[in-house]
Length: 219
Image (cartoon, rainbow, N blue to C red; front, side):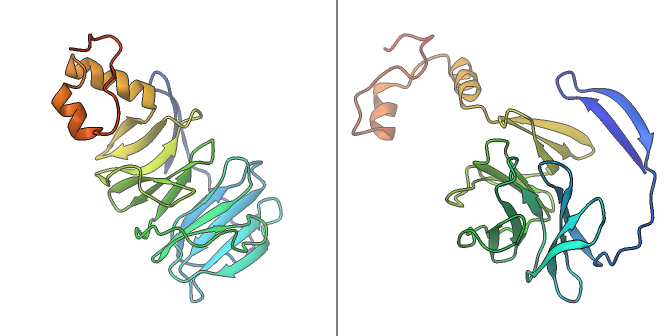
């Protein structure tokens, strides 16, 4: 296999190197379905569908597991960027756990997607999940979906600002923009006007009408 490094701003290839494999003397579970590094790179969160269906935290420097917990249907895993929590996706939802002990920090989030890939935004507020070819964004606090499932997307990552998600799309790279200010500007440019009085009353019947696109007159 080959690992490639790309310039995230210009989307230009910087380098591409072959992968070097190293054998380790450690009882790594079989059927690994998810991997995620912790904040400082010294912890590895691992989900496996072995005979126990487990989630484990590993010390990367020594490789014995620090903690193992049974998680039926464990699939994707992820760390919050500040290391305050970890998440593990499974068929019945997403478990929010202590990254050291794997003890639950809150009730499972009602995410019905048994995701093989899961990522948390840099601010720790948004979670992205990918199951097969479908990508969805979620509010990490409530577990509510922020987007409709988007098909054809996988291998997702947030950019450092948390306003974009990079994903593979049918052999190519897709960059998805989620910055509200950028989305509003794009929508206003496409519409070329503010909401009409009828549209405003239909969408916001209890609010006084105002301009939502400042570059256009309110007619």
